[in-house]
Image (cartoon, rainbow over all chains, first blue to last red; front, side, top):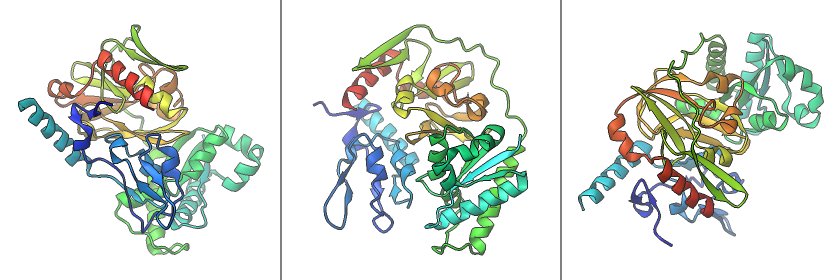
Length: 95
Length: 282
């Protein structure tokens, strides 16, 4: 399968994915039930949910965090991510 | 029109306790009817008349959005919605874990009530531009299984987050693509950005809420918000599903740096190709 890109930049170079705060998460699984991209995976044991496939996450999408009752999901700073993508595009243009 | 207030009364979180207080105060201030979510769930007929005759205000406590989901479940369309946890976060207030309201929680509730009341009596939003935005007629169609996703061949530019922009002079209209509206399923509510708010390219222009989820409207262009589609906001959110490229538009923006920003967008054929790929990977 060819490597996916976002705005012309290899997806793997863009650090955009949810982060779970396990102090807050109550493992209700609403986020996992919502996300169609299989970003999350369930596990046995104390930590029942992990971000297993961060590169599956749609860049700039934060919809899973809006399903989260305990507000346990955060994303990277969007403005910084936009800047990074633009600079990566410029680098590739020069390469 | 008088109001009906449907508030989360979640007993297990402080946000629920604040919602309940907001609901009661809004009902008091507007002479509105209080709707009990538990009773609405179990005996919707009990509130059929109240919902038909009053403007519905929904107050959610946390991101689970039980009150919003309940409104959708009974087919009631809110004219206004608030989410306590979001407002608390935006205002920098730290809520206590106690399920009983302290001074800080009561102050937050009062602030939210004041905002709701102000919005109910806000002057009419600025009219959209007088530009004749002709309805597109020539579509590219990506087919996947039983689904068809239409993309106007010309005149629209797309972000990779499935939002479109069309431009006339220094004004632009923004909406969601046919592909995104089908992913969203039935749109229940559009929480618009403020008029005069600045937005950066790929920033957020409000939130589109469906029975399935809440999606941020990603701005395909930077600029200043000059109008929002009040028909969608106040009466007919389903226009986003029925006519996403026309009457279901969402926001008008006065453009910032269009020529430069267009380089980061896709034209109709390129976007239709992206939809083809997304649909097959979904």
